[in-house]
Image (cartoon, rainbow over all chains, first blue to last red; front, side, top):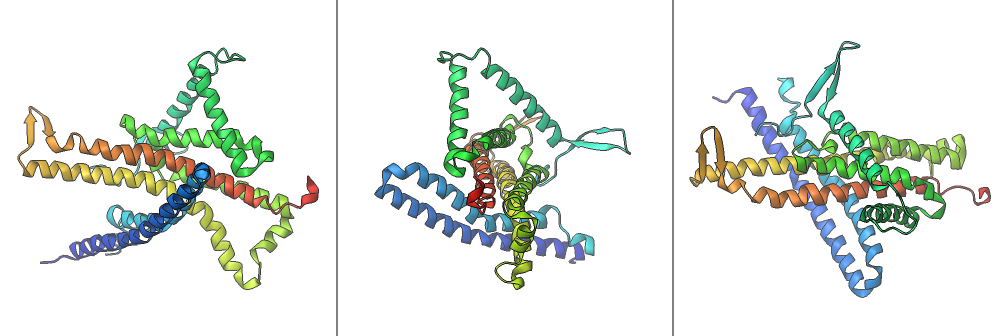
Length: 86
Length: 250
């Protein structure tokens, strides 16, 4: 017999998993950024410091959406707001 | 699985105003402050014009690194920002690295990065008002057209919030993933009959070395990089907020 709480918990777990699909976006974006940085370092090795620094900032920016998804997943897993609504 | 995703524990309660709860984060923060103070005293004792001791060279290297970063990112006239950035950097790096000692990472508590991000937000607003005046600052919200007002307000709020979430998400995400994998390895080694028990102490073979490799990335690398990124973003935002300064003022 499926209780209400079990149903909500299961759906929350699925939701947390689905939320982490957002990790695809930053993954592709960061890979692209790093690839381009390596290309430019190979072309101009003396600009390595500048390229790396700028890349880290850009990668950190690109990561934001993934982090938001992760925070949503964390909330669903550990601080479930739907349980209180039953 | 205990302790995953839980907030910081309450260390003790001060019995005034109905009991102020002091969390682990605050205790660890003050421990770091004391440690940094003692470290600075140790590193800068008996300074010499031509350094011969190792500790003075280390101190000079760190100060030189921060000065260089501030000058290359913000420009020469912002050199007075180096102490603030250095403080942020040291506090953030040590706040993340205390997890290596088995303590709870300070930045895994959302309040800590949020406080730093709000400090950056105050600095941004201050320099925007200073460079454009109060009217110019308010006008900036309605530019280029008045319809953009809600979006501009949203993006202004999103700046500190995304900075705080980035730091918090990276550090606490590392902690959660490490704890999950630790639990999974325990279950796996019980499944493969690699778990032993001596008296009250349990030993799971698979839990021995694999989490340490992950810790190099999630604790060492991630902690240092996130501190660096936070400091860099602070510098970029603050100097770009003051950039609309009229040229005649210099």
